Length: 355
Image 1 (cartoon, rainbow, N blue to C red):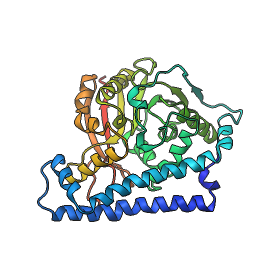
Image 2 (spheres, helix red, strand yellow):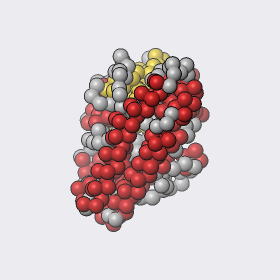
Image 3 (cartoon, rainbow, N blue to C red):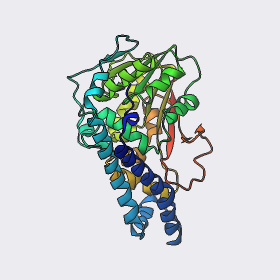
Image 4 (cartoon, one colour):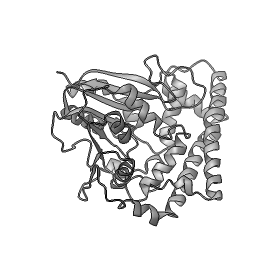
């Protein structure tokens, strides 16, 4: 498979390096300086709303918010241009190769929900589903968004290695699998299991399938809605999803959790890698602000909903949130710890289907 970054010309690589450096300095320099301004502006806020009001009054805040928004727009412009210049070669990859290990099932009649199509999530023009190249653009851009720390899908490997059952897994379903960044680590974790990735976006599934085949991973990719997968009930040992629930309205989150519960065998494990409030009103206010600037309108639904109760209502037991340290440790029961830089508050939602 072509790695676009291996083919970047000097001007393209310089542009990528510039945006990456800007994002790093926004996170490790501008954010902590603003946090210090906030701490000097008065006593700690009692809740996120109050922290948000004080945040927006800081002298540094307009620069902080502008840098976040503009770097994201620059990122997609650079990634989009680099991908479209190589469109013919990238399209050809979808159909190359005769060996078929897994499968790809697309549904051209699938009706995409309006909450999915109404927003350019992450400010990506056309979002993830609209064009055959959109998956390549997102895959390339995501490397910069994660500050190159998720190259090789490190976050997802940590998730599979630290949050999922070690054995006894014969079938696992990944809801919202995208371009396969979460599904391929599942195939490595469970080499003898049937691994199924489900997503609404055909472009992402086409890229996921092509890359899985090139990597020698046997995965079944299916275009479908995670709220109604069409898979038989009680057939899965593990149902997972990574960074998908925060892009759904609350009602859709509940429907997805109920579908996951339906799919699980007795004793089966539900595991979703997501985000949760840290309990620090200032830091959590910056997460809400990020959602607004990044065209992710359902962050408020995720943080404002009781997903533990949703799991119970779906018939699952022992639901819990556990912090997740994406840098090195994965699941981190002791919390996120002190971190100077801005970071996503990763957390794992866990629950079990009763025996």
